[in-house]
Image (cartoon, rainbow, N blue to C red):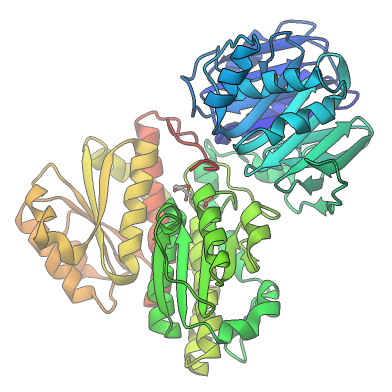
Length: 606
Ligand code: F6R
């Protein structure tokens, strides 16, 4: 949801900023822009390639700020692209977030003679700083004073034409990372554009202001008090944010699934005791014994992972569980007490709605845990304790490997909580032993990649799809449909197979295919009956079935076979072919798979 990047050092800032923006492109691609001190400002509609083409020769300076926009206020036009500036064209700003009181601030500034060039909320920030500069000649102090007047969210970087060796960055509700290099410093929305320069980073907290120069960075609060923030070393390397020979990040990330599961379980299994262990839960493990109810919150795919978690926790750990969209939880009056565990799931660790749900639950006394992929992210920091996915950076906007990792960790947490309660040693051991087999089984599914690609020819012309499943694989039907929608722009609905007769069956005919997840598990017979009902209405069916299940092959038009596993773990396998199906469908249609229209990777606005 918008990406900012800034550089201050001795090198060619434009080159560094453009390369960094290309890495950040998954955060927004409606428009892009750059300001380099001493060289000026260039902006354009679309993403970095367009910007690169129009950068003039000799656009040289050693500090600058740049931006990728995911439009919230104002059309994605060149005029609305960042960086924005003030009347004197001295103050420059790039911003991720929303200035909620932009109207009233704009009216006040207009009364003082300010003229606005764009219809964005961000431009207000530049004019506010210009106004404050009249009172204090100090640029960092003017930025802080201006930001104190702002209601809303920002991850922002400011420069002043008269002070080329200075970037002021600030954070309130939108992520900001400072990269600390040798004789150079960086600021960005996340670490991905910084990694090729340095692995040493500092995460800003809400209310922090960073004053950055070539050789130093100083972090203080908006009030000017020093804020000591620890430096972290990022484990990811640059290769992980490159495509590594694949056409798209989405495919690369799907293919990474076996390794992602290995990383999620590494060091977390105690085979002999049938136990799962997490360093991040040590401090709260006694409190977890007292938990009577779990509320899982997440958005999009993370929410669907949570739905699988609900089946796992209730069936195998015996704990009453509910799953909520972050966006709903915070506006209801949720019943939460100190025996409630709030479990937040988020790849980015920055999703605004999930974050607000955590804050609300904590206010009400719940213990908050996170399953988060992005180390040092806001959700990771705000939860009382948590578990990192260690899935590596997920660049494609559509979540794939992170989802696989979330399910894996949920299975581990089920064993962890279950063994604190009534789960037997044998069951704990059985689940954990089978988890260690999952990477090999995913590999077998990935080997069917070409078969799935070829299947697309038979399905790419359909405009509507239904995805059906039951029990553990109902959420996978939802997730499969979401993947198809977001990358192929094809209408797809996930539905409980048992609910078909209560309405959706009416839509079925030869032009309305169904993807059915029908494994030899506790709901197998029911699923078979539901598929027969669809077949009887001439609906084409593509089934995911257990390896060797010839009855299903005899029944449906197409089958993809999935290795046998425990029912509780079957969603981890089932989702992989559905991710590939959506991917190849989108490729066939010529869509920009990694950057679906209208979407952004990290949703830091409500
Ligand atoms: C779908 C997708 C989104 C995210 C959702 C939550 O493919 O990527 O639905 O799952 O925006 O994001 P995180 O997990 O970062 O909180």
